[in-house]
Image 1 (cartoon, rainbow, N blue to C red):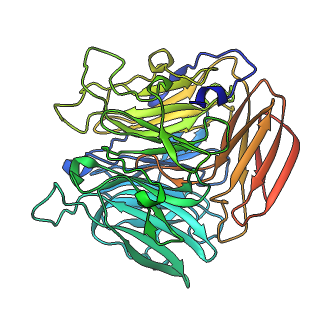
Image 2 (cartoon, helix red, strand yellow):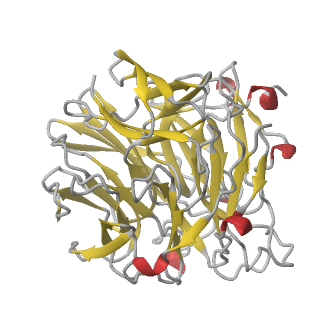
Image 3 (cartoon, helix red, strand yellow):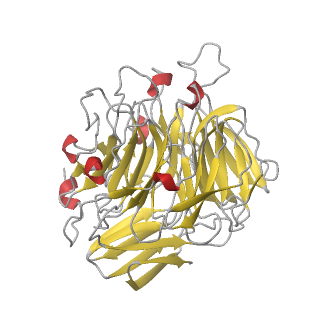
Length: 490
């Protein structure tokens, strides 16, 4: 396989990633609840008041969802939020194109769109936008934009009203398409107990919806799914779509080979599956030696398989090589899976191999983790870490890694309806290395981000950008000064 030969080599020595535990700086919050909250537990990360500092909105399960506003210096305070309980996840997006970020709250029951006012105030907006959710158990979300406005995909888990459930009782999913000032709901079936969704370009460069499903409940009939909006159908083996069946929990997407095509990370109970995007538009499974399978605990003596949830790529030492965080934790008391299951922090080496460094970095905690986020919370150019746990406090870690490389944060803006340029491709070249990232909403496990794309640059002291905007326009920017946040428009 050509994978290792293609991996990017930075110009600086490898920095040892280290985090400082600042969990005490968060307001008290836990994701709690019974069987209906074994899954979910995500966190949305976005700047809700325009001060340049990312804020947090955490799902609560049986507790109310919790909005935490960033005060700077890694300090957060509680802000008012409509008191919805039963929340499983949250995703930020600008629904109505007014420039202010709104929020989709996923719930056990009717989901709720919250309209943001640009000052961290939120109000229920289902009726305003003609969004009519069903009384379902929602656990996955993604959004994209067409010419008329947003298209939202909502994934649902087990049908709670099926008397023969929960096994083989997966609920249907839905697309909500913006038309004439409101959403038109379309059933997306069959559903196989979705736990993550992501609209993004696949290996062929086509925008499609990937759905990761929980084999524990679909049991026999289902598999991972890929839906094509243009064809209005799911792909099959005749399209080259490999039939994959796993206990799917989360999705992460990032080009790690330097060819401009995004690889895909699928978390699961047992192996965490990395799929390598090929020039033929298809995917192959990563070799075991890549180091990403993370199938058993790397701390303690419990040899049972791990349970992976939220996965996210991010360059934690700014060496121009994406690293990978995987939140882990037993569903509840499943005896066949590890009970003390430390989170994984996989640092990519110069040869492209990923090596476990969570213990050395100080983030190998063993609570039942669910959602997470890698994000620069204090504006110092290093990605920090937030971890959501089930029936345990949230965790907050400041990245204090020394001798990191240079960096650039790229934030895009457009005119309505797609004000955050969802679907744009950003190709950054620095030090002879080109990195490509796509702006997406979705993936992870039950939570996502809306904010700048973070690039580590190694020793490079200038950069070039090529942006392919969602409408097909291309803009280029040369001789960019590093170590700054850029806000760009077409």
